[in-house]
Amino acid sequence: MSEPWWKSAVVYQIYPRSFADANGDGVGDVAGIRARLDHLAWLGADAIWISPFFPSPMKDFGYDVSDYCGVDPLFGTLDDFDALLRDAHARDIRVLLDWVPNHTSDEHPWFQEARTARSSPRRDWYVWRDGGPERPPNNWRAAFGPPSAWTWEEKTEQWYLHLFLPEQPDLNWENPDVVAAMHDTLRFWLDRGVDGFRMDVVHCIGKDPALPNVPPERERIPTCALIDDPRTHAHLREIRRLIDAYPNDRVMVGEVAMPWIERMATYYGDGDELHLAFNFPHIWAPWQAAAWRRCIDQTTDALAPRDAWPTWVLSNHDNKRHRTRYGSEPRARAAAVALLGLRGTPFLYAGEELGLTDAEIPEHRIVDPGGRDGCRAPIPWDDTPGRGWGPDPWLPWPPANDAASAAAQRDDPGSTLHLYRALLAARRDSPALRLGDMEWLETPDDVLAWTRRHDGDVRAVAVNFAAAEQEVEIPGRWRIERTSDRRREGDAFDGRLDPEQAVLLTRDLP
Ligand code: NOJ
Image 1 (tube, rainbow, N blue to C red):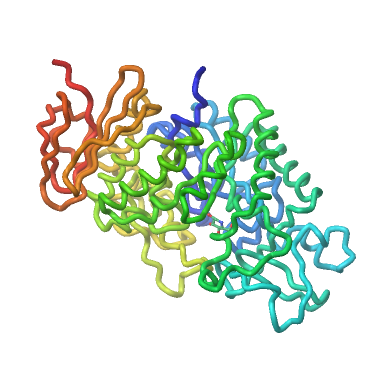
Image 2 (cartoon, rainbow, N blue to C red):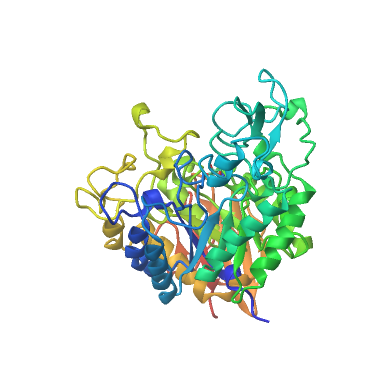
């Protein structure tokens, strides 16, 4: 039986505001993505996930959706999207959209109607509770904005729930009409031909209607990281049936944004819930062999019994880029070799292939309520003064953006861009890297090394986390296929690793 495409795919995340600006207004758009598809095809990305481009008041830059079945005029039109989808498919690039099921915008017509009166037919589409204006119904905490996850509506004298901003009221998935309406939004895009969805904080959709307080010792953690209710699994099974009824392996990738890998694993169900779930502990792990090893082992241990397929991610639109977190280019490049050598589906974040660092955002230019602007800086496409953008991009540039531009790096075979391209090509050509088992090798403390095997194809990966040279012993004869530091590529591997170097090794025939 052939494996579904998403197991061997490398998925590339596009944050549309920051990716590419076709109309010169300083904000990226759908036509901009379309115009850069050749960059993605050249890089070798198998799929793109596009963060929300739906109509939105942009309080959370698109994660506050006011119409699930459209394109915000800032980003273009449905026709632009159809053209993007067509052109992506023509290049064998699949397209995943970002579905935001936990909450809508407060400007969504559903909420507008719900908030008019307690008797509104849509009142129960959201989560309302009684109580006095001085005390919210429970101790739940919003992820950003004011601490409480509740906002008092003076007009109807009730509180409504929002795990994020007050402008992002939570939908009530206990109401079957909400379920049906949200299913329809999936069908709308599936019928248009999209290949699947990344599902925003999908572990939060089911909630115990008693809305019990969180224990006092967890009161300060945003409640969205704690919600883990059995009702969600039932919802996911229904959504899975809907998705699987479409041909060609459409995929659901869930954002299960909680720090416990064992809990995250439960959202794969028995192969009947999410196809893939994000695996965040890795994105939070420092540049240390032991920390990486722990995340990888915990993931393997949690997923193996379910036969569930892991995902790996180092950077995204909510966290500092790994190039910034790890503090140096050699580390970021070594991390790329490691990421693309792991067993599971890797997710890259646009600009990671250019080795971009987060932008410094002066106080007067901060726009995100969650303080995440730095990793959302625009992508520098070329070395013209506008870097391929209109005169006034919505956020400041990342540092050194001229040398980091896609055009400059394409001309430099030693660039991070070329490294990523070579690693993606190596993955595509190697069944072991795409689908193989992973087995640890004995190594010194600061080194991780493993083999990958599939149907007679073998690769090994060795990563030196230390700032000093290290020696590793990998049984057998190996040749360096790719290295993070451009040195000795093609040579026989003699067991020596340069400081903070990672190598991808292939069997050397005797
Ligand atoms: C997770 C998304 O990645 C983040 O950007 C957003 O703010 C929250 N969910 C709320 O939708």
